[in-house]
Length: 291
Image (cartoon, rainbow, N blue to C red; front, side, top):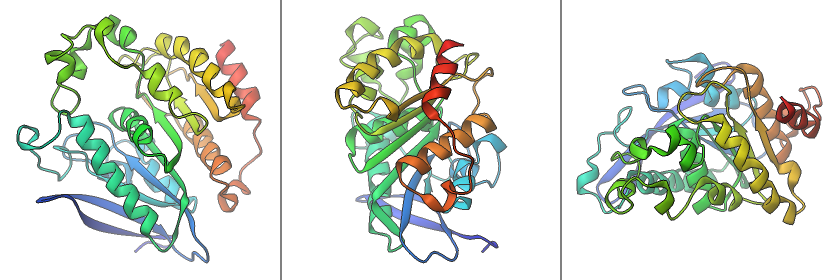
């Protein structure tokens, strides 16, 4: 119990014989259903879900805590092998750790949609780094996710360390990038151009820092105009936003707050949005892209 919200630890059965632990953060005093958010953590060892729930780690990654304070119901699960989630990828039924993550996160969305205080038609996903690309992966497979916020989560495969895909072939990610496609970006059957374009016309916001040494900003800047062509087919160009802060692999406060206002706007969450200054998102996008 806190003054403004409750924090419950849930054990969720996601597969036969496999359960994950998650924090469920619920604002106090709710009088109607509110949007739900799945907040996915970065690669952070034993911290896992605790970081986004504000129980440790980097303050700039406490987005689950900050969002429940804005009036959202938030679920923050552990990712397999991180936090309290012991898991053996060699013994499961999935061809990739990423697919296992997608499955688990869809089960978390199930829980949000079934919750008596959540409006199942207003669901968002947010994450940083590991959580950043897994928010994208989840939304590609789950149309219930209406808004995606990704921080330091992606760049096209040819721009990931100059096309050196070794970082993507680990057991938590997609080993077939090595075993089937020989770590060759030219052979990859998908790229982030297609993944993000597949979200259209749903709302998408990326924080892609200029000095991110993991996901190159130059690749993001190449991809966004291509993705925008698809969004424009849906007359949804305003639903695609990119910010390029002058920092490293981080989710700085000003961009984070702007992403929350973006969620407020597209999930029609006036309780928190009304307390925020009105921002012309289109104008800001142009300014950042010119920089």
